[in-house]
Image (tube, rainbow, N blue to C red):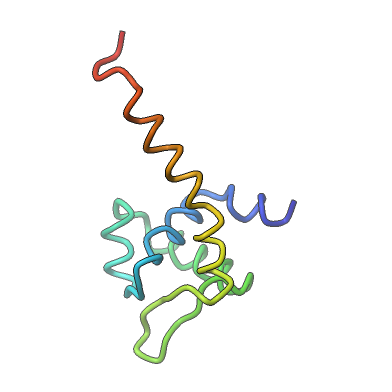
Length: 94
């Protein structure tokens, strides 16, 4: 349940998702996540770091750890399902 509690926190999964293609600095990460507040970003990055899913590089960018990459592989089926689901949604609200 600890994993679900962490992933259920606002922005946690989005941060992990945005880091899937490689390291990002905090400013770029904020821009890619709809400009969440910097305090929330750093709080989530600390939590994800404590969970050993994200680490800060020497150049101050953030990247997924091996465990974080493995999580990405685990949620790929959910992304594929979400893409199928989005295609089936009506284009305009009823």
